Structure formats: structure tokens, C-alpha cells
Length: 269
Image (cartoon, rainbow, N blue to C red):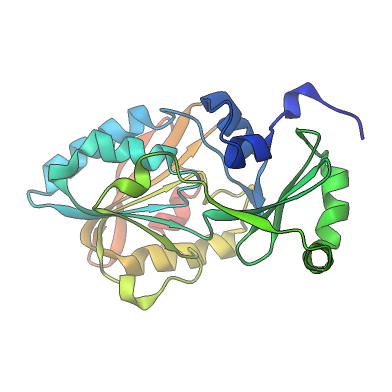
């Protein structure tokens, strides 16, 4: 298996041995972790401009402390930045939702396997290099068998929390495993602000799936709540739309850099 310098990750060293902690390393790792049809990515301060605009709307519409939902938080880097931007005095609770955040790491000789807690293979590394996609697909086809083999070979796994340092220590931050296509009813009509970043895109999901996500966004948001839909493109430019829920429907407050690609769905009846 040929090595490629641009795919250097060293997952085992980063998460288990805690060596060489740096932003470039964690950015590379998350850019290559696949969960379903999406890649979990992180990039420091990628939401800086959008967060300022969101903050101004929060100041305009809310005088009391608010409940915020950040959907698809990935590593939590951007969520922590949002928290710092808004400051604790404005937040009752900040919820981070994602399908999964914790990972299990198996190491067998020069191979390192990353699994989610429900045993879905996320990534494979060989001699500190991420496997090319065609090799990863091979392991993906036998992912359940691999778990069985690991048990027979008595290869233990390490469970690691991949949230950025400091996020889990915040008292009014709560992480919950939630699927945007199947939200729990206890969160219905709960949030004053909902932020969705780099998740509801046509490159990931069909229009029909995004319509289902819109249904649940409507359910979890309160009347007069603010909803931000954003995508950061390859040039690190944020393309977003900010909506307000009025009479059970979403109304457009502002487009940023042309607006979200799913704006028509959000505004449809």
C-alpha cells in the first residue's frame, strides 16, 4: 500500500498516545473520517463571520438566556467558538447534536481501525497513513467480521472522546446523540436558536431527505426562534441563510454570500 504524505494522520498517536497535539493534525484526521454519507471536518474559526451576524440577531430578538442547538457538531471546535462568542451570560444551555461523537480504536500491527460505538467503520490507517478509498472500501465490506476477529484475537479497543479540549468541561453544554432525520420528542419546541453547519447539503443528501430534516428543525425550534443553515465551501467561504420561525413557518432574515443551497426547501410550505 503506497504512502501519501498528504494523508498522514497518526490516529493512534494523536488520540491514544497524546503526542503532537496540533490543529493541522486534528484537521487532517476529521477531514478523512466518514460517517454515513458525510465527512466529519473541523477548521478553527471557520464560522467567525457568520457567528457575529448570528450573535447580532440573538441580541435583537432575545433578552433572556436561551437554549441553543448546534447540529452536527463533529469535533466540537466550532461549537466551542460559538460558546465563547456568545458568552455564558447569554446561554441557558448549549446542546451539541450529532449521530455519534465517540470512537473506538483497534490497533493490529501497523493497522489502526476507527469504529463508532455502534461498530460502524469510520477510517483505517496503515503506518500512520490513511488508506486510499478503494482499500478502505474493502475493510468496510467486512467491518462486522473484523470486530468478531478482534475479539477472537483478544485485541482490545480504546474508547476516546473526540470533543475538543475544554468543551465537555462547560457546565451548560450538553452533548446528545441525535439523528437530524429522527429527533426525540423531548426536544420538540425546545430551542430558541438552531445552527446547522456543513450537514444539510445536496452533496450529502437528497431533497427528500432534506425535507425530512426541515420537518424536525421545525419541531425542535420554538416560535420566533432563529435557524441558521450554513455551508463552508472549499475556499473557506461561508454560504448561509438565517431564518426566523413565525406562525410555524420559516421566514428569511438574511442571506450570507448568496444564501444556503437549501433555502427554497426551508421557505416552502
